[in-house]
Length: 399
Image (cartoon, rainbow, N blue to C red; front, side, top):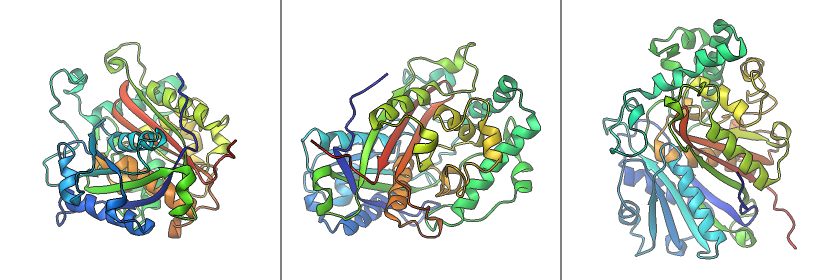
């Protein structure tokens, strides 16, 4: 799998992100407006100067009218996109391509979701018949992802008690990171004992092994790379955008072993080729990944090439993905601390990468990060969509 990519053709010059959480006081339109206003203020650009918008939401609104009405955007084009939990990332991907094509000079990708008062529990949802996911509807998301744990132990000979420790470490790490983030939903450190002993939801997944349902919005303003310094002295350049969608229903296939996400492997390979990265273990400064459930993050470390197969549980326990480790992962708290307003999560990940590379991440600021990877996963093990973005502080010389 390969694509030509648009490395260094577009740049993010401003971003906005609301506080995630139980936002009973704000509608979905209020939240997207708050995020957009933050980005416009940062870039010192009036709304009228944005040429087009891409709106990502799973179910909080229909059509582009949700955004145009909220912003009174004066007949500008608005495209609504949806791609499961990768929805916000998909809005970003399409917005970047629109600028790279030359169709527009300044665009905005906006992701928003208002779940807390919608009745959505994060367990079952009624998808349209023929949407490609019907066989999995009888399995909740926690149940589907809980299968990663015993499958991983069986394939790599990991003692279930050690795997439990590694899963606990993932939750502990991400809650500890989120404690330093004023926009995270959950900002308390949680002891490893409390995580390990939390009430079970599915298989060995306890409450603290699962990300929360929340409300929130995030957005990015994108321009041509050659124009970026007109808006900021610290733009972030887009190096790679890769999306892979499962061709079948491998979750129902007896040959699928639940120890990898083939879509993640394919999208990562494509992204690394676009960005010219040959060793992600050493070339990536930080990563924001889709830690919907704790065993997911462990498997992702291997699918993204950050760990050798069968080693992620051990390296996670050794602290290699902690904020002060070899490769900081989910330093903003991830889905575990931020919660998961579906349409906004992909752009929230990019928001952290953008802050870190501008040196604006406050108490959780890393030491001079240069390359960041964000990863968004939608669907279930074996039948998912996967998005990988790579962004960086420096633009390769042209000509």
